[in-house]
Every structure is written in C-alpha cells, then in structure tokens.
Image (cartoon, rainbow, N blue to C red; front, side):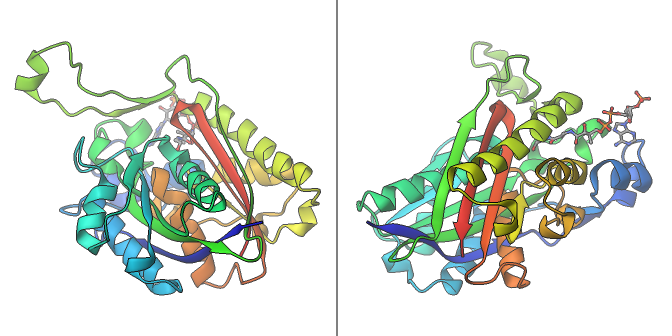
Length: 322
Ligand code: UT7
C-alpha cells in the first residue's frame, strides 16, 4: 500500500497592507464593525503582483522546506479563481518560472475549497502510483474582483498564495479526504464573467465583481464545517481529543467559533490568522497550514483536520498526520 504525506509548505503575500482604518476612508465602515463581525484587522493587497508572482514565491518556499528538488516534481496543480489569464494557466506559467521539466500542469476552480480539491487529486494520483511528487498551490489576487464601493464585500478579501509538496510515503500522512458540492441554486456567492453573447462587452471591458449574500453563505458554512469534521472523525474512528489542531478556511472568525462550539473542539485548537490576511479564497487553507507549521502549532507526528467551504457551494476537508 502506498501512502502520501506533506513534504514541505510555503506561503507568500504581497507587501502592501490595507488596514480597517484605511478601508474606512474608502467606504462607510469602521474598525469596530469589521473586527467584531469578521475578526479581520488588515489584509495584504497586490499592487503589481500577479497570482503567478505569489504562487512562485510560495512554491519556492515549499520546495525549500521539502526533501525534493525542482526536478523531482512530476505534476503541478494550482487552485485559483483569479488566474493571470484565461489561458495559459497559472500552473503553466509556474512551470516556466520554476524551470520545471515537461510535466502535466493545470489549474482548477473550486472557489475557496480549491486547495482541498487539489490536495484530493494529488493524494489519489500519487496513491495510484502514476506520480511521486506533486506541487499543489492555492493562489489568489481576489482584490482584483473586489467592488471597492461595496462595504458588504470589500472589507472581507485579501491576496496571497500557499503551496505544498505532496509526496509518496511509507507511512500514512494524508489519511482521509472529503470533497463535495451542494448546488448554490440561488447564486448566493458568485462572480460573473463578461457575457460572451454580448459583443459590446468587448468594447466596454467592465470589471466584474464578487456578489454575495453573506447571511446565506454564513449558514452554509456553519452547517458544512462541523459536519465535514464530524464525518472525518467518525469514518476514521477517532475522537475529537485525537485531533491536535483544526485549520479551517479563514472567511470569518465567527464561523470558526461556531464550528468550534458545534464540534466541541476548543478555540485554542482552532487556528485563526484571519486578522492578518482576510479571506484569501483558495490560498487561505495552505497559508494557514504553512504558518501553523512554521510557528510550531502543528509538529511532526501531530494529527490535524483542515476544512474549507466556498462558492458553488463547494466544501472539503482532510485528516492529516504531519
Ligand atoms: O469564502 C466564503 C466567502 N464568504 C463568507 O464566508 C461570508 C459569510 N458571511 C459573513 O461572514 C457575514 O455574513 C458578513 C461578515 C458578510 C456580514 O455579517 P452579518 O453579521 O451577517 O451582517 P449583515 O450582512 O446582516 O449586516 C448587518 C448590518 C447591515 O446594516 P442594517 O441593514 O442592519 O442597517 C449592513 O448594511 O451591517 C451593515 N454592514 C456594514 N456596516 C459597516 C455591512 N457591511 C458593513 C461594513 N461596515 N463593512
């Protein structure tokens, strides 16, 4: 039986920081509202950096932290909703930047759950023995899609990237993964593309923005996060005490607090870094995992659960032994 493991992580964010007070100069909001309703204090935003720039920086750190070299990587999967171009994919641009050999590279879009979807693919492909070492990345410049006049959404998002090298292993590391999707038939979380049937869009080139019914997304998130964690525990015959840490998608600190209460895992076991980054979509989970590892919150031998949800409505979770 072949197993898989995390073999190196890294993350990167653009240097420019936008605080809640900075945002209060742009829209009618204030630090008190944003902090108490979301937990966010600041976020990093790209000025010139592209999604590929951030993905490259995060990937180099993950490779450096791993036991493999660039030549050992035999596939790249990038989860993003904000690629630099419609094509080629960020993964393909990364191949050029990192000087990777001729290997399959592709992007996937499962919104904020994208990184867990990429992890699922990498895990299954390595277990099939077709590949040995896969570089997976969650990278976003979500603030490009942000409507800076909409206070309901513009206070929430930030930019960044997280990367992971997943490798074959003799011992079980990635133990179980759940991914799923529950149709968002009402379009509660959506970002339109230009209407291709209307030739006028080619002339006007209007930027499209994120539209969100926050309360409905909140309801979905607070249902699916606890149920995914509980399913992972049940089907692996584990108790909540067996879990050293939970690393959830950072969309709202209140969502994480509600999940902590519902699964009865205390908040000091729930990683929270939303105060520094806001919601970075597909980058949120790998940034949080890398930070938790580098800060020593998760140590070799520890068991942790990661869980995400997002547009679609997609969701995913993984049970991992580091
Ligand atoms: O990756 C997945 C993406 N999204 C999410 O996970 C989002 C999930 N949802 C949420 O996190 C929360 O629903 C929000 C943070 C988006 C909103 O929090 P809420 O407690 O659900 O607030 P609300 O939308 O019910 O709005 C309450 C009030 C409204 O005013 P009125 O109608 O009560 O007078 C809003 O207009 O707060 C107002 N408001 C704001 N006030 C100051 C909304 N945004 C702001 C703001 N600053 N930025």
